[in-house]
Structures are given as C-alpha cells and as structure tokens.
Amino acid sequence: DGGITQSPKYLFRKEGQNVTLSCEQNLNHDAMYWYRQDPGQGLRLIYYSQIVNDFQKGDIAEGYSVSREKKESFPLTVTSAQKNPTAFYLCASSMRAGGLDTQYFGPGTRLTVL
Amino acid sequence: EDQVTQSPEALRLQEGESSSLNCSYTVSGLRGLFWYRQDPGKGPEFLFTLYSAGEEKEKERLKATLTKKESFLHITAPKPEDSATYLCAVQFKAAGNKLTFGGGTRVLVKP
Image (cartoon, rainbow over all chains, first blue to last red; front, top):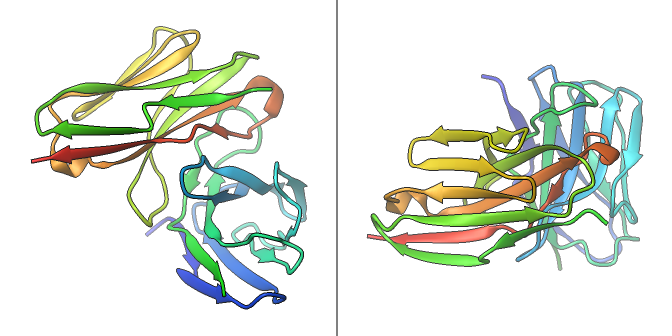
C-alpha cells in the first residue's frame, strides 16, 4: 500500500525542547517537502529536498532543521529557537524534482507547545 | 511578489445548491495550478492540476476551470460529504517546483 506516513499524529513539547517529526514515503518519489499550517492561513514551506543528502530552505526555515539521508525519509526537527512552534505540520512528496509535478501529502502531525 | 488569493473564505450551502469557489493569482509565469481538498485534522487530498488557460477538469460533482488570471472550482448539486476546505496552490515558473498556497475556502453543505 503506497503512501506517505507521518508520526506521531499528536506531539506535545515543553518550551526549550527539540522535537523530531517523522515522514516516510514508499512511492519512490525523488522530492520531499515540509509545510506548516496555521488556522486560517495557507500552507507555508519550511524545507524541501530534491535529492538525497541535499535540501533547501523554504520561506520559513528559521528554527527548523532537516536531513535527507535516505530517499524515503525526510525528518523535521523543531528546535527551541522556533518561537511559535504550535501548528499542524504536513509532509509531502512528488515524483520528480523540477518541472510541474503533483505533490501528495501525508496525514500530518499536530504539535502543541505546553 | 507572487500571491494566491482564495474567495470566499467560507461558504455555507444547502444540499443541492450549486456554487463556485475562486482562486486568483498574480502572474509571473504560471507553470500549473493545483486544487486540493482538506478534511479537518487531515492532510490535503489532490483533486486537479490545470496547466493552461481554457483547460477544464471534472471529478464527480467538482469541475475546475482556468483562465489567465484565476481558477474556479464549481460544485454542482453538492452533498454534505462535499463539506471540506478547498485549497488552491500555484507553481510559478520562477519558483522551481515550489508551491504557493491560497488561504483556502471552507465549505459547509447542510442537508
């Protein structure tokens, strides 16, 4: 069953802690993305990766870090430097890097800072 | 700056009452426009891709159209299960394969 999985579904973090959100895909897609969604706002791009061991900052990368050691995995770390991390985080992937290509989304992780 | 604007922000419909959602964008070289459906607490589900002005695509009660400045998502005779937030996203040629999303339209269809 092909798709994108994200874990955990819900995550609670204390102020000052780093947390890592998992994203895995078995679609054999080259490109992967992380977005943040806040109530009433559109999705905003945090980081994206077009190939293993390479990634680029999106529009709101400050306070976040990523790695792409395997094609199927693109974890996102929310660091203590992120001032307002409470949000819904969405991972996506697309078949090719570059050109017009449909992005498919995972189910999301809701992060709450206590 | 490339921008994508969706209207209205929210739409309440009676079952069977057809309506349209709008997605407008500032043009700096459109590569493609995407429509997604998002249910509460879930990830967006892909609906359509439109590439060029004049193009139309249909799926069940949904029909998407594209002009040079905007796209419409027409919902014909909606049912309560069509209730969701509909997201529009644009890929601009200058932005590689990055997407710019609109704020979404929340649709509620009452029986």
